[in-house]
Structure formats: C-alpha cells, structure tokens
Figure 1 (cartoon, helix red, strand yellow):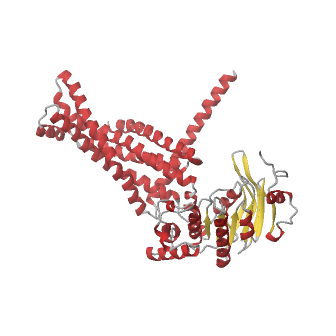
Figure 2 (cartoon, rainbow over the protein chains, first blue to last red):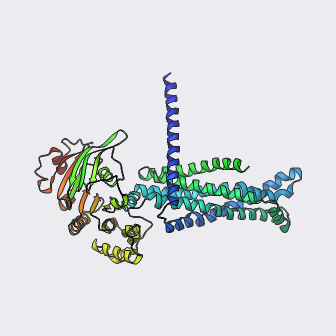
Figure 3 (cartoon, chains in turn cyan, orange):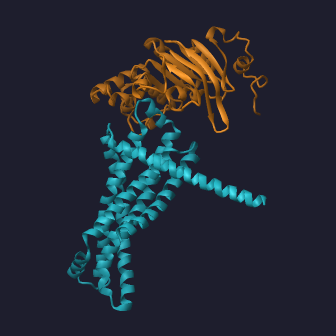
Length: 259
Length: 248
C-alpha cells in the first residue's frame, strides 16, 4: 500500500513539476517576445547575434544538407526502381528537402550548435553575476540579452534553411547526374516543375518556428542556470535536449497544419 | 537615507534573513560583517531589487525600493561585485562606460571613452588597459575595472560585495585605500560586505554584524574591539568556541 502511495506521489510531483516548468517557459517566452517590440532596441546586439546564429551556422547546415540531399537521391532511386519510378528522384529530393528534411535537420543542427552556446554563455553570465550587474546598470537583461537572440534566431533560421535547401537539392543533383545517370537539364527541369510555392513557404515557416524554439530553450535554461560549472553544464544539456524534442514535436504539429 | 526595517527573506525552508533592521546615514560608510551564508549578499540584493524580500520594508531616500521609476532608482547606485562581474564580450572601456552609452543620459562614444579612461586612471590603471578585454587582466586589475565601473556615473550610493576576496594582502590594501579615498572624495554613501577585517578597519565608519538572519551588533568602528558582544568577539578573534556554531 505504501509503495503504491509513494509511486502515486512521485508521479504527482513529476506532473506538477512538468506543468510548472511549462508555465515558466511560456511566461519567459511572452516576456521576452514583448521586449522584442518595445524600445529601447539594441541593434548592435541583434546584428551580432545574426552573425553568430545565422552566418556562423552556415557551414554545419550546408554540409548536413549536402550529404542529406545526396543520400536521399540514392534512397529514392533505390526505392523507386522497385516500381519503375526512378524518374521521381529530382522532384522527391526537392520536395523532401524543402518541406521536411531541410528545416528539421537544419533545426536540429542549429539546436546543437546555438542552443548550447546560448545556454553556456547566459549560464556563465548568471553564475558570474554579469546578469545582476546588467540590472544594476539600469539595463533589462531580458531586453539586452534574450530579446536580440530570439529575434535573430527567428529571422536567421529561414535564410539558413533556404540556403540549406538549395545545397541539399544540389547534393541530389550531383549524385543524380554523376552516379545515377540523369540528364543535367532534365534533372533541373524536373525539380522546378514539381516544386510549388507552398512547399517552400511551409518549410520556411517551420524554420522560423524552429529558430525561435532553439533560442528560447538556450535563453531559458541559461538565464535560469544553477550555480557553478555543474549548473552551467546541466543548463547546456537541457537546452539542447529540450530544443531538439520541441523541434520534432513542433514539426509534426506544423506538418499537420500545412497538410 | 537607507532604512531597512524587519526584512525577511527565505529560499524554500532556508530562512536567510529573519528581521533585519539597519539605518545608514547619508555619506556614511557601513561595513556588514558575518560568516559565509549569513545573508549579507542577499540583503544587498534585496536593497537593489535583485531579490524581493518576503516581508519588511527598504526605504532609500524615503522611497520604497520596489516602487517608482526603477531606472531612476538604480541610477543612484554603483556596485562592485565580488568577482567584478565584467562583461567578457566588451572591452574594458565599454565595461566602465556601460551605463553612459545607454539610457537617458547617453554620451557620445568619444566622450564615454574619455570618461572611462579618466575613471580607469582614478583607480590606478593606465589608458592602454581601456582597449583590452577583461579576460586579459589579472584579478586585481579586474577589481579595479569593476570599481571604475561602479563610480563611472558618480552614484550617490556605492555597494562593495567582498571587494578584497581572492586578492593578495598588498592588492587588498590598495583596493581598500582606493575605496576609502573614492567614497570620501565623492561624498557617497557606501555599504560594504566583507569577511576581511583589514577591509573593515580601512573602510568603515560603522559596522554591523549579521548572524542568524539578524543584526547581532551595530556600532561605530571605534567601538568594534570593546563591544562586549559575544558574536562579534568570536568573529573578530576567529575563535571556534562561542555562540556562532563552527562546523568542523
């Protein structure tokens, strides 16, 4: 009987803890988002974050997209050959990259690179009292630290994913023309013929949401980091894990919405 | 000027402040001493609004600390943090002039830099330090930069949180002298938290001893050695026996 009570108690405590965290994250997101639209605006910080989050993530997103597009072309060719549908390789690579793999894999790679970096930076600032120092210097840390990161990630991710999509399609093209024997101009024609505006728009909308999630998780966990090196380490792990899980969950919800 | 009445603050089941009462007059240098974890830093953060007290009131110039224009309230304060808390991503001069580069009284970059260099000179640092980053400086130099930042906007009230922690005795003496000089020169009200008795003797006009979440003794520096307060005597002489429980 005691064991059942203890188990139920543990489940209840975990549920309450989970709901409390969800509530805290939502309040944090609302506060931070409201600061994006209210002056003063920190343009220099926004520009710096656009560079950090967007420009410096290009290599990792580009390489991921290149190899994914190339592998996708091989897989689709192999699967399509079973019912004489090898010709769909260019269009399926393009649609698959633009609608699904570009934003999701790009989001996950950026989550690994950016959420961890934001959480570690803000966590260190919390531990070394730099965030308290900002407040004593009449500067709102939410406005100075969090709002520019959220805005930059939301703006930069669609651009990153657009570049990644193009590179991914190029990966498919290289494999299609060099390895699978497709005619170069026919491959390009096939890609553009079947790709619709809605495919691109839904992929870029997903990317913006994923960018917001990545920055939000990095900022939330870093801003509320525990004490010491262990606290910063935990914040970094939590940021990457929660951002990755939330990206996959949001991807399903958005796919349903755009279906 | 700063009037603290019955301030309580708990973190979960841990009651850190349990009715702290304290008055600090204008231009006075108050030093708060006490063991680790007795709530000295928490008290300071409550005054600045970085922590919200559970009960009690904190009046600064007769105004409740958590009411009114927050920017105007904070503009009265300068603070030297324990680890200096310099912003790693900014060069030294931008750290010092941080407040002057933003907000209502914003200066041009050139003027802010000139003022930062002047403040750095005031704390004994050369102008070439201005363009370095905090990570390139020694602990003592970082404290000086933190001090320069604390005084950059000529605040009326300056807080010093463990100003000599982690410094060698000579550098500690230099920082203590600088603090005393600056506080006298600016006519500022100062509140210092420290365990370092050499800092207490160099900086204080008045001393308050915090233990068990309350002020156990408060009085002028001249009466420190003759207070007859068992808590203060044990702390001053570093004895393991006494009313302050020492964990071995």
